[in-house]
Image: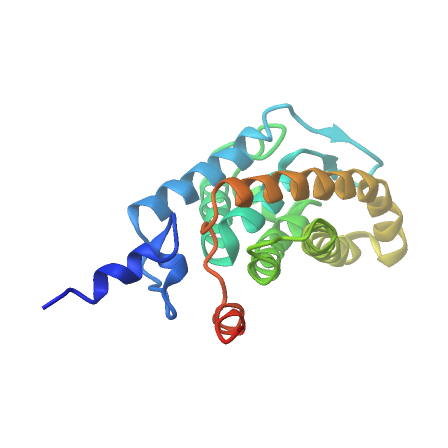
Length: 217
């Protein structure tokens, strides 16, 4: 008898999990490596430091770029886990945030809302990106990254700042960060498109996308 399971793994290069109709949610060694790499990437993007803008204590950093890349390259599940790992290590006291910040105090500071927004941002970016693959149109990808990486994060950031200083000052203090974060979303979109072109299958396609292509012709 022929092994019917073997061909299934060969239909979708280079990652078998992307071709199975109901992919396993098991976290493999490769998944763990990717999660660790992106948690480290976000930490590394904090090494250049932070630029303080305004009087609210919220700095400009490069780490939002890593957050967008995590969602767009790894997808919602693995990207979300990378964010969780990073935030857990930061909360435990590792100085992984830009400026060498870490510990429980980051959750009582002015940037707490932005940090809270990282996880829903990655989940949304990963969700939207999976539905743009395998072609990943540039402008659609940019919109997805702007929604998740800018609007979502800033919405959480402003919400928490409002509790501290009021809505008006929170909005005014947040505005200077929008152009820079929009540029990060643009850069991330270019990188994400190239990565998925070179390494297809990093994010499993949703069942609707696979079934939608099946009956053609």
